[in-house]
Length: 61
Image: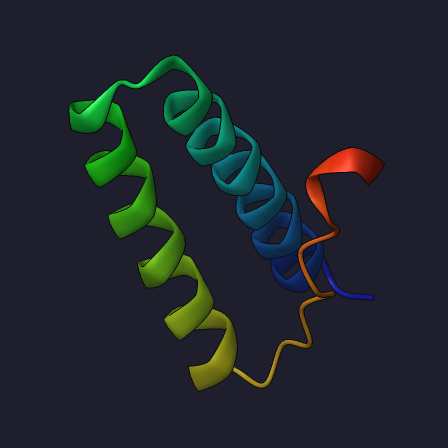
C-alpha cells in the first residue's frame, strides 16, 4: 500500500471517529464539520481509486 492511500484511510478513520463522538455529544457544529470532512475524504478516495473499508457498526468500535 502506498503512503497516500494509507494516509487517506487513516484520515477517514479519524474523521469517522470524530463524527461519531460529535454525534454522541450532541455537538451539531462539530458534527457538520466532521461530516463535511468525511464526505470530502471519501470523494478524494473515490477519485483516486483508493478502496476504503466500510465503517464498522458502533458496537465494534
